[in-house]
Image 1 (cartoon, rainbow, N blue to C red):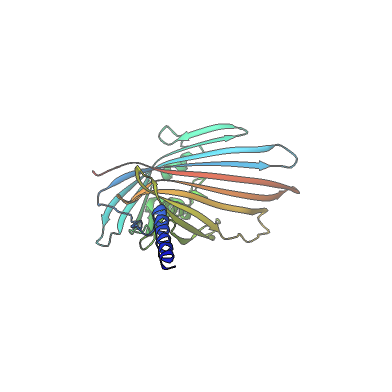
Image 2 (image 1 turned 90 degrees about the horizontal axis):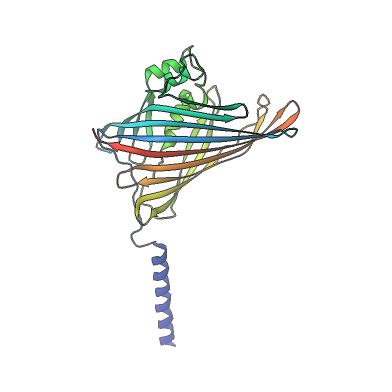
Length: 306
């Protein structure tokens, strides 16, 4: 009996060791994720956003539209304090947009000659070269987000260009910057560890906001031969209160994504976020269903130290 129990104990310990080895837990798998910056660094991101809109009229065919917005962005590190908090600026260097609609297709590139009197001319003129100042700590938390005085005066003035609402409003531009990054956990994490943050996002033309909660899960190395860590994200949206003045109801909304984080250099190498929204509205007594799917891909193009 004693020998049998001893053998059983040894087999149980062996099984536990094999299990731990198989999962990678408990054997130095924990890591600390941190953003890292050096004074004078300059690096560029490309944001490529594609939105597919589908509208279903019960008395007619489904109408589809595809909108693409590509922006080239430059981050410049102005300084880093002893606690690792970086002072940075972001500028918009280039905007390309295309739209495919039932009425045709059009494309505009800010690098080419843009008709100043056209619908996109004033908006592109306002945004290209626009500078955002902000601070970021090693966990990726942003503070002191500021738009240039020139941009603010345009946004708040009487000559605000068409299209400078929503995503390109003051709140929308700050929100875009906030959601570009990922906030990292305070301590070490193992594969499977989750954490979250709450944000208030723009939700109306008069400063209305809507609460969301972003949950992150550390997945560990993306691949054995790549020094990138995968972080998955899921977003919960606060339900929108019914408004009799707005004949549109959000039925479902979800957002999921994956960030590939270069922990050696302390920055996001790439990310992909997919947001899906199902809406329903009443127009002339008919219920119109609409679905929007937006995929935003961020890619680090190049970094350099002047």
